[in-house]
Image 1: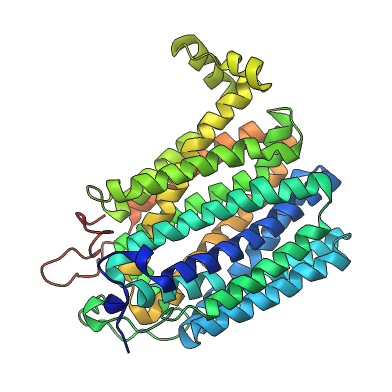
Image 2: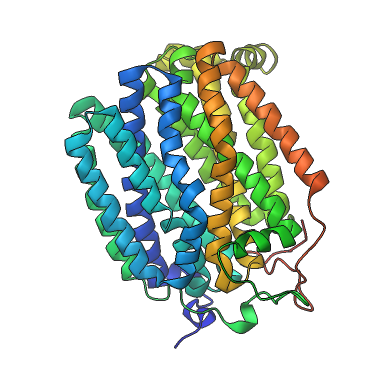
Length: 456
């Protein structure tokens, strides 16, 4: 059997047919998923005009991770990953088709979204845990960056182009059919990706901690996270960024309506520039990784993300300040494109949001892959996802309720401030343990395509 390092030739990941197959599977699956999630969100918002109802929908997407996330990681570590990903695609496609018949009822939409999210708990950990066997640990940074690029492309295709166009013309039912087809194709392509989940070379695996007991069972992933300061901080900061992103998903249609005074379906004014920023982030991450460790990249990305949310909260003041002090003619954009200076400012502020979330995501995934034992990576990723979703459930309920009472701006500013305080507290109270690296190299391993690795 060929090893991971043999499968990844010096020419780079993009010369590998199996990695291209993984990217195609990821693209089909993510486009189908984004179409469904955007469609049901817009359907619920337009039917109810309530922030609380859209919050309940996001919770339906989140709760399965809280309940099933950790057991899903155990299943991922035990079962063949390619067969598992195929099964996930087929079941989720069936849920999409069920929306054709039951999508007229809000209750049924919530239940089907719950099932869709529950089955999906297996997909992320299976893909992430299988990645080192496909590309080798030395290419994990680049591989994660390419996968994030695919996620962004899928967001643009699914949430900015396909779903809005269909909703404005033929309605939601054709979108359910299209999503089902894409999910089936993605599952089949995953199943045909040889090397996904293959054993990792022993010399590439992180060394066990001296004197550490053998970790087995359901909570082994949590044990790994608690014993390594770099993983712990990356998990906390990714959790905060994920919560802020979910809050933004809940609030974006209402922000578009109440602040920008546009229809909720025009949320693309935020989604599109955010996607552009995310692409910029992917281009910058390999460059930044030469000078900054993945753990510190995560911290920097979270700081920028929080600052971007504060900017959205003060978008009117930001627009005035830009026109008065920087001499940028935002009002001229209104004359040429038919959008207000506030919309223009919102689009500018959305760019660093996408950039920052990309940096957080790539940095954290790279930390988890490089510092976690290969046989436990499914549980580490699943535990992180479950902890993140568990931590976000109560705040998301508050976000939706408070937004209906006080408005979107107040919620954005308060949420950003509280997350900033939580990040500072995590750094001050983080555990001091670190997994020792092998002699002669930093514990986090080599950075993508060569680079300077440092501790967090």
